[in-house]
Amino acid sequence: MEKMEMKKYTHGLSFDVEDWYQSCVNGKAPITKRAYHNTLAILDLLEKHQVRATMFVQGMVAETFPQLVRKMQKEGHEIATHGYSHQSVRKLGPKRFQKELTLSIRILEDITGEKVLGHRAPDFSIGPDTPWAFEIMAKAGLQYDSSIYPIQGRRYGDPQAPIEPYWVYKNGTSQLLELPLAVILLGTKRFPIAGGGYIRHYPLWFIHWAFGKLAQERRQAIFYFHPYEINHRETMELCRNKPDLSWKMRFFMFRQGLLRETMPKKLSSILKKYTFLPLGELVHSWSFSGVK
Image (cartoon, rainbow, N blue to C red):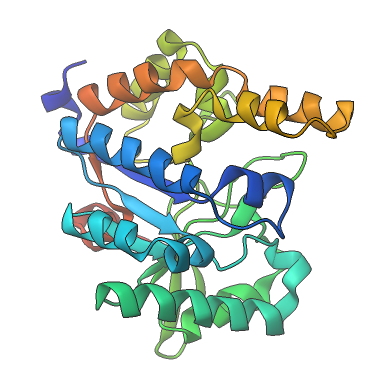
């Protein structure tokens, strides 16, 4: 299917901008230049294909590299929040979540001079057990969240959540739209295809088949990636530079680095063939005018 034929199925494209070692291994570690250079590589790829995306930027990354946030903004990407410390929203609890959300929004708005509209929780750590989080986001002035994966996952997911955008919070003038991550339907089963580790492990033919399935179902979808996913040397270098790592941690790093070398080709193929917009623009497009 050619790209022109897919235009009526414009999808949402997003990147969670974080430093892999700090976000996945050691939350107390400083943000490093790896996050900066990995994101520059993604920006180059997006520029090559003339595609704009939503950048969910972790507050600590924005604090460390404000010039990176300005570059994203200058190149036409939407700047949204990925929290401040990359701690689980569930573990933060209401008070600390509100504090970190407010801080991350202020950091980003001070850098860009523009209002932050969207949020994505670290590790999709929001669900039916955290209704307070949606209220906090709405009252903070956010317009949308994209943290719900409508699947039964081991660490995250809500299999009862709608697979289409829906109002997750409404109270007077405060409201929040939820943009769930992409799934395809195989019979009654929901199959995750939104990005990250899923795209990394799926063969390219299956990825294109999944996009075709979305078109058959006449559905737009939300996709996510991480800049570090195109750096296949990162985990190996960290293992070499940290000889005291346990074998358990080395195996974790091996799994996290597995098939990263396939991501530049897969991303290029997807960006070339299908049509994407930043999530904030998709929210305001006619496409979601029927959201319930």
